[in-house]
Length: 121
Image (tube, rainbow, N blue to C red; front, side, top):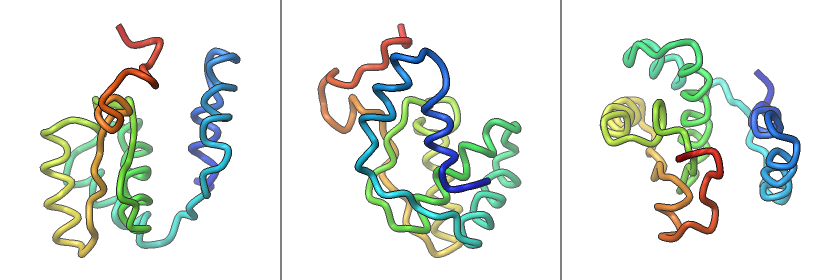
């Protein structure tokens, strides 16, 4: 998986929404996938018995963890931004020697609905 995989993901779907998402992150640096990121993602997948789509999500978390990112902002509450998952991820990261970023939705980070997901009801 190439480090532009996040850009590919947010570029999918409704063309107007995709363009807005790509514009919103256009100034963000791209973080490479290091071997440590892949190893950590595999630990998540194995220990949490993630479905195939969850493995892709695990890589997002692992990349952020290995690079020491402070916040991982997502609307994915199934595999990333939920209390149960955060507890398990924190334990795995601690055992592997990596900090876990604060995982939250845009609304939680900003404490408002400026970036509310228009598809979430």
